[in-house]
Length: 67
Image 1: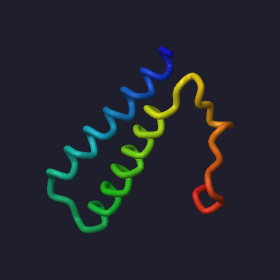
Image 2: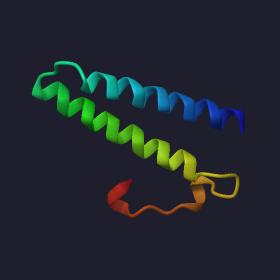
Image 3: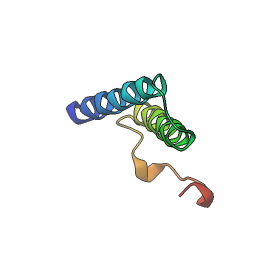
Image 4: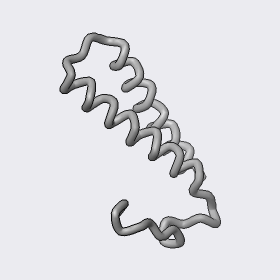
């Protein structure tokens, strides 16, 4: 459980960092990169929160397009 908390904190720190970057002056390429990474981190946070002791990654079957 401690590992999960550490992972959640790391993801949240990444989200906070990317949100801060969005407030700075970025080129269009940098903006797209940061927005993409922010989206990926938010998805990772949602998945990490969803995953509980009874929800192991092996039990979740994603469509082939998402793998």
